[in-house]
Image (tube, rainbow, N blue to C red; front, side, top):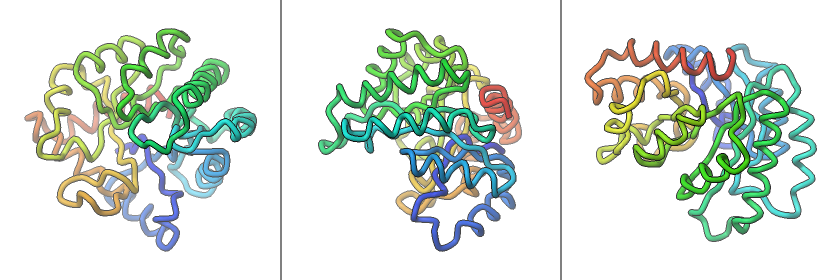
Length: 253
């Protein structure tokens, strides 16, 4: 399996990171993309990818962490984008959930720089869109979507948004939230081609049922696969094969 989005470099894993990665491998997670959220964590993602076989890096600036005063860090991220361990640009995007986030115009300026970097580097874009999916899609349409495509990570929109972003070359990232009792995601996935879906954990966030509310980790991707496949009425192996192929093609793994 491919965990297309994780943050195992977070402090939540400082005490047992190597064991967490080993449990992931034992559960069948053979490739993992570690997503940076600012310059320092992006650098750490590259370091992790150099140290641990089966880990690749994404470099970017999370919308919850951006500020006008930190724009200079984008120069560092742009330099890191050329490293061979880097397979994607992000995590970037917009977040309209937290009141303490930077103003929308600042978040949007960072997002546009990431879109330009995706085009320049030829690497796909990893997008956060909490309560801002339509606006993220609108900005992509304004700027022109990058030819390399990308993912709408932890997809949180409706079927219309899914079809809109798929038409621009983006995959739908599905993780633990798809296992929650009232999740609309299985119904959305039924209406699109499985080749447009990638699996992810977003570790340490969004642990799947029955671990909801606890620390997530890559090994739990097997639970996501099995429960989503059950909701769709297909074999877990079929879902794994389709989503792995989508991730390999998108990230050139």
